[in-house]
Image (cartoon, rainbow, N blue to C red; front, top):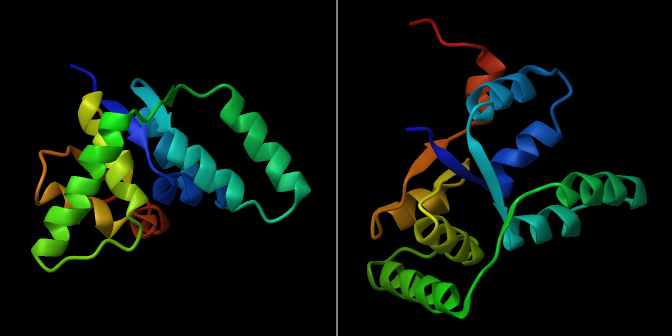
Length: 145
């Protein structure tokens, strides 16, 4: 059964900033036959991080054709509970919005493609499916196996 991904900003930013083509090629290889979705929060993070008008336009155009997952009131409440549960265990997320992204992934049975420790923390308290897309693996090229 194919994997359906919810792409997080932390992974997508590696692809967008790639000047070598290696990161983009690796990303394309991972997602090529998979359903790919973005959250509203990821779209927001990408746009608010634009460096100038040109980049804003490029990102807005990229986002136009994406399959966006909407956050519901239930997602917000469940995400707040994740943050609460983690904090009670002594873990504070760097970006609590990651809990909302994780909740959307859980609600839609999606695997989060990411490079963000927050998702690892969330997966310790929720059955979140993860695929770590780290820049270091791309810089080394394909691993020998």
